[in-house]
Structure formats: structure tokens, C-alpha cells
Image (cartoon, rainbow over all chains, first blue to last red; front, side):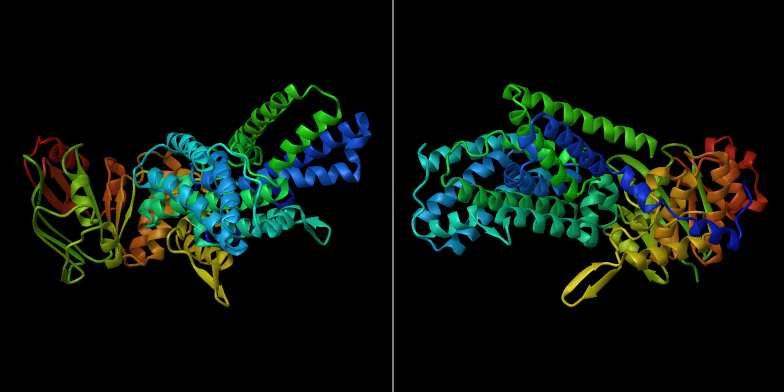
Length: 334
Length: 246
């Protein structure tokens, strides 16, 4: 056992296959959530056949997208060991500003740019307070949640925005339209998930996000620009929240100042159910997407199965607990 | 020519003289043990060499040039790497990712640059082979033994092609079997012409690998002698002050 290994011995160690691909899939949280979604689907399909109809599937695929877009953005934030509970408020602010910008006659591309910018700015402020001022992310974004929601009321004077002027036509077409039979917002989810996963696994930025979540001190000692990377994750989440607002308001056709209230919890729940670890270091954009699907499937299935909707939170809550337990189980076994 | 020479280095923190008038030389490829009780000034001395903070007075000559490191990256650029006691590794990343952390190899396709996972794995495997450590580049650090973690941390210094490696208590928190592994790693660095300053409390480790032993007591260098001319008893006496100097 203790003899110093010779070269041929080392070769045999290096050539040992490191965990099979199948084993890796079976060990992943995402896989088990997919299984959970399929089981729920099968059971509910038997109780309420309407669940499995094309119309209802289309309904689910449209509804989960808004949470999914934000959950994809939340993933790198949580991976660095951070959290952002202000995203619901940011969704509200960017939503009403979107309406107001449209109404004041800016061309649609300019409105889009402005909305993304506002979202990114809110995120960047969160990120700067967290990284440069070393404040706890929960408290920072709790403050921002209140501040931004209040500003949403201030700018709209508590009025619903539904007159979008000329740019409104493009906005509504984008929000309710589809391309190749797939809703535009679902395309946005697919593209965002693929791009985000690529960023996380193929770029220095993604490697640093992971490293910071694993051991921030080690990351700093290795010369990684920890603070800048953290700010970038919050800013990116803010921009993705702005993008969500564009699709959501375009779909609903109106922006109320309660837009996004409570949505932050769904977004965080989706991210965590999908395997992101709140302590940092782990997460995938596919996990965020499948977590969002699960939440929407639970909501939809309970409605169709005729269960009192007050039970919804119980089921979502149970799944969060289940997800955390599953994660604990996997990490102690692995 | 010596690799590192310290001339009358002192460091005060307010009224406290953490290191006082210390002078010594380190030759290329030499393994030197730095010993002393808690608070004797070992960490302060090593942190000055690694560029964590400057000396209050004195001169430091590295590789033939007088140097002043304002930050750790200056020292690293000059060829001095430090292996931290807690190893400063990311548990959630693979061995290869840790070796290359902050120094990733990139591949460009058109205007895009992305991580060259394969090249980093191959290079990491080469380094582990050179260190003769049974560490697989793809394995996650979380599941590694203390010895393998040391191998990862040491491979980082090899990547930079350091001339001097400072090791802070590398055998403090690992099993007996792994200690042997780590000592073998240190010898392997020497074979590559790398000088090592080994800070340790463990007498057998120091006598096992070091050619020379330096003892600090209350900020003063009280001994600097060949291991072959000393004994654990003498070093212990020097550390606790039972023997004034040697």
C-alpha cells in the first residue's frame, strides 16, 4: 500500500476511468427532478386526463418560462454563495418602466436597451454592496427589494400601465408570438439556458464563479478578481430580470405595480430544486429550468386535479425540502 | 550565488519586534527547515518573503537582485510560491481546475476564447506524474486525501516554475502514511532544482528532508546549521531557549 508508486503503476491509476457518464447522470440532482416531473405527470394524467392534453402542455410550457428565465440568471449568483431576493421587485420596476418608456414614444429597440440597463444597474448596486462593502447578500437585497418596489409605486403613481403607444405593437407581438410553433419566450429560455451553461463551463468567468463559491479565500489568493466577478453575476441577473419583464408584460398586455411580487421565492426555489447549492459552488442552468418546470407542473396539476389551491405552497415547500435532502444525501454518499 | 539572501531583516508591529535582525542565505535546490515556537516569528518572516507585507528594515536579495515585494503577486512573478497551511484549494473543483486556477489555458476559435479543458488535464497529469502522486486530474478535490491535496497545491507551484517554495506546516493535519507522501513530494521539488523552506513543528519531518535547519526564538535567528551536525534534542533546546544559540 505504502510503496512509492513507479511510473507504470501511475499509468494504471491515471487510466482508471473516472466515474462513468451514466453514473454521473444518475448522481445528478437534475435527473431526479426530471424523474419527479414525469411521475407527477403520469399520476395527475390518470386522475385528470386533461393534464396531458396538448393545450395544457402548451399552457405549462408558456407559464414556467418567466420563472425559468430569472432562475437561469439566479444560478451564477447562488453559485458564488450569494442570493438576490430583490428580483421580484426588479421585475416590477422594469415592467412598469417598460410600459412608461413605450408610452413616451421611444422606439422599441431603445426601450429594450433601457429596460435591460435598468435591470443591470439594480443588480450592479446589489453586487457592489455585497462585494466591495462586504455586506451580507440577504440583507442587501432585502433592502433593495423594499426600495425598488416602492420606486415602482412612485413612478407609476399606483396606476396600471396598459397604453404602450406605437412600440406597444412590437411588444405585444413579441410577448404573445411564436416562432416555428414554439412561443418566443420559450426560445428565450432555451437560448439563455444554453448560453449560460456554456458561460459557466467553458469560460474563465464561469470557472471563477464556481471557484468563488467553493472557496472565496482561495480564489482571491489565486489572483481571481473576486469582487468584479460577483458584481457581474448580480448585474447579469438584473439584466435577465429586465428581459423577463419584456416577455411578461408583452404577454399580459399590462404592467401592474404588483408585478413580480413574491416571484423571488419561486425563482430561488426553482434554482435550489434544480441542484444549485445555497452555500455556493454548484449549479447548472438546466437545473434552474427543470426546477421551474417542476414548480409550474405542481401548480397546474393541483388545479386540474381539483385540489384546493391553498395546498400549492405546501407541495412546493415539500419539494424544496426534498431537494435539499436529496442534495445532502448525494454529497455525503459521493 | 545564493538564491535568496536576507540581510538584517526586521519587522515591528507597533512596539512588538516580531522579527529582529535576521540574516541568512538559501541556495538553489536546498531544503531548509524553519522551526520555532508559536509566536517566534516564523509566519512573519515567511510572509515578508512572500510579499504579504514589507520588512521594517533590512535587505532582501532574490536571484541576484535586491527585491521589494509590495504584494504576493510580485513575489510570485519573481518565482516565489507559497503553499498555504489550509492549502487554499476549491473543494468543489477538480484537481486540474485547482492547479490552473487563475492561470487557465485558453483555446481560441475565431474571436472567442474558452477553457481548454483537455490541455489543462493533460498538463496536470504530467505534473502529477512528475511528482509521482496518484492524483487524477479529473477527480474533485473534496474527495481527496490530505496527501493528494498537497500534491495539487504543490503542482500549482510547479506550474509557475517557481525557484523557491515556502511551505507552511504541510504535514500538520494529515495521517502518518500521507506524511511520507508529502515528504516525498518535497524531495521531488528538490530534484527539479527548486529550493524549499519548510516550516514545521514536527521534528521527524524536518530531520527527514531538510539539509539545514534554522531556529527562530522571539524574533531572533538563534541557529542556522546543517541537519547532519545537529540533533532533535539540540533543536528542541534551541526552540525553548534551554540552549541560547548554536
